[in-house]
Image 1 (cartoon, rainbow, N blue to C red):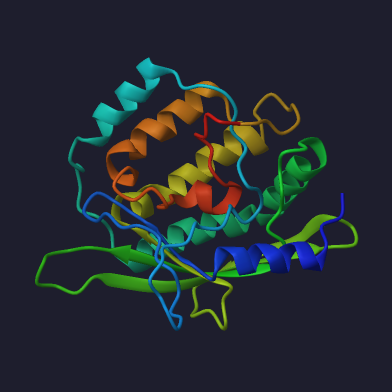
Image 2 (image 1 turned 120 degrees about the vertical axis):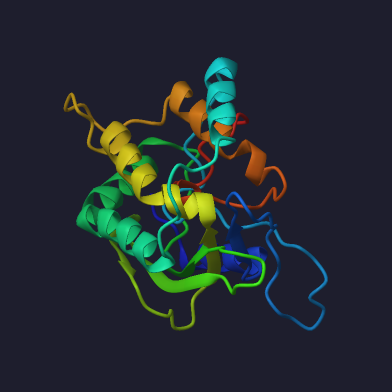
Length: 242
């Protein structure tokens, strides 16, 4: 299933070079358009890098509420430094990047409703808020996806702790979302990419989607275009419209 260069250019033009914000426990923000002559409108965010969503059908309200209430409890330990969080999520991802590439290509080949973003560079800032009078800790990272338009599949996916050069999109992942990111990457990989029983890849099930939806409901509802780490990779996984 080949995706043309013109399709990707149309998508990038439609997205307007937006800046995503993944909100955490202490910050709520929406997607803001990049600097332009007018710079007056808020654009819709781009889809996930690998897919534009992999969910389907309904939320388990009991799981949702349990996760939602759990998310309101304060952290039992101080939030690590932004550099530590960036290293953790990058290390988990990089050690298994081939698995994520394979999963993305599986989604493309098996689901008619999945569209890949294509070759793209995402600048992702990892941010930790401390106190009102202290500047946020911020670490710049770069995620780069390589997509073969002729073959219709991804060929490489990398993540570096470095300042991006001319990224297609700029995002940040902050506080709670940053603290959870490495564990969420690992959990998703084990459950749906490298399945324990040796089956092929899977679409996130209802229980998992409900858990994620509840986990971020109190934060992301204040910024409808906000994202957590999994949405940056595979798009919305709690989308009941699919």
